[in-house]
Structure formats: structure tokens, C-alpha cells
Length: 254
Image (cartoon, rainbow, N blue to C red):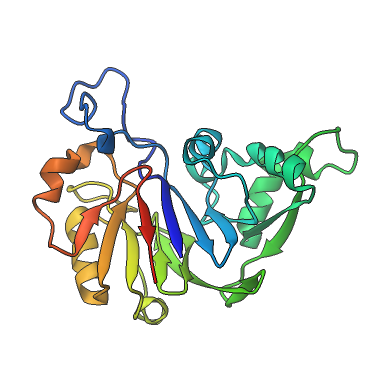
């Protein structure tokens, strides 16, 4: 399995206009983060989780020329705003794009992108094939996907387990039942917004504590605010098996 971090930041990521902090002025490319998204290649099936406002730039940067399905974690704009740019893959691949999302997210997509779902469609618009995520495992082109429901304050959000790899973003609570779906993953990605308490995101300390409990071989932190600190500084505070992810980072998972 190949994994590419398309983006590891937030809408409070970097650069922030007018901010002169060490992160926003950093020349370390690992401190320059687009909105959180990830690409997963499993047995020649090519998948993306979330299409934020930076989706087109991310896919061009990563040179991803095939996309077989998209999964949405939740309906916030920093995770959905780039869906219009799937049209390039419609044209290239000659088919509708399978999109997997909860019913609530689908309703939001239909409001935000009403022209895509209109009865009378304008030529050249994106074409999607909606599939409903209801918490049960499902398959995409023969590959098994396990959705994991987490809480983003009061909003249910889906993470996903792909074989031995689990990806979770925008969470501050995971029930014991859902943790059981994660356990045994070799690699776990978890959000860590900042060091200070936050109403809807894990802090750095909370994320490290949860990864220690789940005990993967390797843990990565994503959805990082500029307030967390620089990549170099925060890395020095982390356990050996946990690190900050960075845009463009690639993983190979057996």
C-alpha cells in the first residue's frame, strides 16, 4: 500500500496573512501545509479522502493521474470545497466518480454543488456516483474499507481503515467500540490541532496519549494548526514512533 499526505494543515494553517510567528515565516517546507487530505493506493486502486479547497493543487503536485473513488469524512468546507475539480478525472477516465459519504454529507454536497445534481445538467460539469456510508464495512473495486465513526465536538465524522492503515481527522472523541475497529493497525494517522485545549479537536497531548493507547508501529499527526509550533520543534517533543506528517510525505505499508 502507498500513502501520500496531500495536505496536513487546517484553515488555521500556514501561511496566515499578517502572521509573523516562527511557523508562518518558516523556510522549512514541512511547515507549509495545505488543507488535510490523503491519497491511498491499494492493489492498484486509487483513493482520496476529502477534497478541500486545495484539492486541484494537491493532485497536480503529487502527479496523481488516476482516481477511482473519493471518501468524505464530513461536510465542513475545508474538506469538501474542491469537489468540482474531479471533472478532470471524469474526462480522462470516461466515467462518473464514485463518491462515498454519509447521508448528511451527501445532502450538504447537493446544496453546495447543486449544479452537479440538477435534473438539467450543463455540459462539462463533474459527474458523480453517490454511495452511502452507514458505518458498515464496504468494498471499492474489491478493496475492503472500514469506516470508523468519531466525534468532532457534536458532529459525527468518519475516519477510515484501509487494511493495516487507519486515517482519522477532525476528532476529539472516539468511543471504545470504534477504537476496537482501529486496534491492530500498523500505521495510524490522527489529528493534533494545537497544544491548547480545543472544543472539537485533539490537542497534541491528547493525540499522543491516544496513539500510545492504540499502540501502532507508527503514528502520524495531521490537521496541524500553525499554533502547534514548527515541525522541527514539535518533533523533538514526540515519542520515537510518532511524528508530524508533512505535505507530500509518502508511506509504504506492507
